[in-house]
Length: 212
Image (spheres, one colour):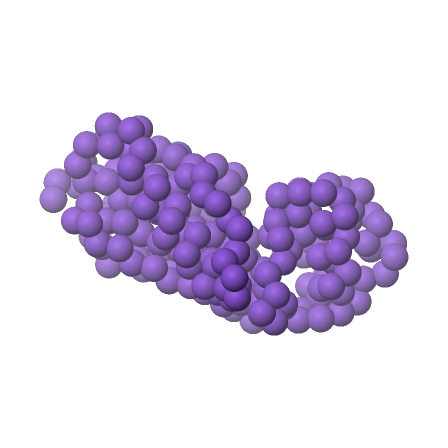
């Protein structure tokens, strides 16, 4: 395969995932968010939901006209992050009440963040990795809760919080991958790309430093 022909498609419009890729010197050639139904299936676990949605996003993106127009040598990267409390799946907070309910449940407790990355390679191969990270929150005071809810940082975030923002001050302990909690496990992403023949190191050498 000729290196100059390979292209990377990120099946997401998430600025967080784009920023994470930028931190390691990777810039997608195309952003193609894939809109899929994220409703959990009956008795579906948080881990299984994360895997299913990441794979569905990658497969849907592969059918998009914009992606097909890129020609050969296309790598499609998709990801999904789910917050779970036991077998309970916490929603992506869309309303004030959603966020309040999530944060009240997480206060003073440990929960799991399941972040899956799925890669479709030009040869049709599909590889998927799910990263499990355990996060423990401090017990949130009324002031903690009220001030965070007013910030509206929680909008659209799984579990009602963004660890890369103000909510990082709530984290007493994290065991696993910080980047996975943000939305894209970088170690696994690079490993999958390298394993599928994507020239990660070449992109690193030609990309400008992020300054981080």
